[in-house]
Length: 204
Image (cartoon, rainbow, N blue to C red; front, side, top):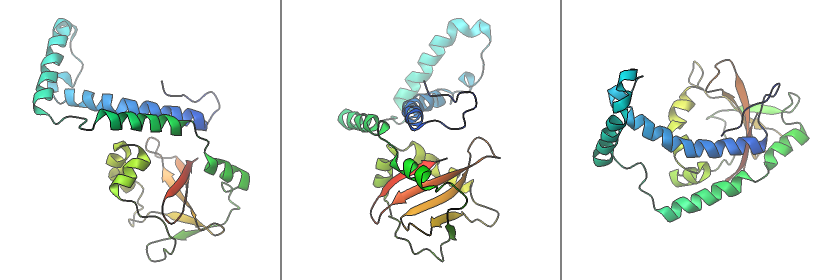
């Protein structure tokens, strides 16, 4: 089960967040299969009680058609999947060093110095990642498939995306991100990096 916020809490701990991400990684394939079943309109709504004795047969027929004519959900090999699972478990137990740096150095305080950057004034050496590197970073394609629509939600009326860079650390970016679920809520995101790779991230 994913973690739930307790009374008065505003954010999960690192451990709770990692556990919730693991659950999400496991659940998305289940939800994807459910979505395929709901492709059949009859199964895309609440069924009357007099249909309960027949639901099993309907679902079996739908799944048989899906297995025969739909593209497989997973075309990878079991060994690679097992390695990915082991990597996810390992990373879920790691300490978020960037979070500690932000809290200890006061990077989340308004007094910390940030400056806006845009495409015409972008002189930092942020790494360019190809699709495979992004998949390794996100441990799969779930976030990548949502990235385009999610990014579009954060453009302002002029099609701009505000990003801030630290004036004291050239290898640290910050951005304000609107919540996917609550339109009135924004999060502050930090990303640490070097010339080659993204080193860490933290959202508050």
